[in-house]
Image (cartoon, rainbow, N blue to C red; front, side):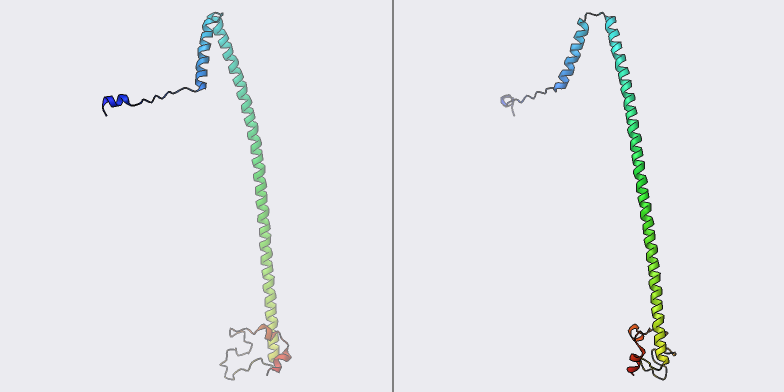
Length: 180
């Protein structure tokens, strides 16, 4: 582009304005300076007033900081106590649940032991009934005489890896004898 073309282009002017807070602070500082210059007091009196104002501000700030520190300390203590109480309650709850789980586990083991002993007693009773039926001569199956069958030599059937069926051995001996 040539210079004449650039001159004919429209210009965009961006104005930046300061926020109202900056203008207020600047105005307050200028006003304070003018007030000090035009004040009816002497320089020493004005300095004394400024020192007194600064001392009062320092004392007030110190008191506020002390109050704030005390308030924060109290809140910290209360919060620490509340957290301690909740942690204690949580620990007691966990301990109670562990105790209940242990009791339930023990009860389950006891029930399993009892069920096993009941089952062993029933198996033993079934074996005895089967042996009694064999002793009476009512064999549930005929065995080969050469001993090459699946049953053991004593005829109980439990030593050869095959237990007698519960419904056959638990039945009455007359039913067993009638099958032969």
